[in-house]
Image (spheres, rainbow, N blue to C red):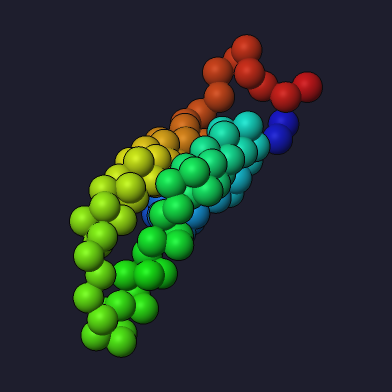
Length: 108
């Protein structure tokens, strides 16, 4: 009888906070992880979130003002929403790993 491996909810949440999908990969939910990761990459590429954030960081470090900082922050909202959803889902998925299996799900 194989025991279901326990997953740390905090680790899963932090991994998904670093990059959406990583917490799901940690919990061995490959499809969910790939979905969150691809979604994050599509949002980033489509809205230019990384490029905008790097521009804000450069402006903050050099003291230059950026007239479109509000637009950059607004474009980052879909990515942040996906990241928050990924964190919540990763924690819930890790919690599911801690639940005992019922008789119909046991490995043979």
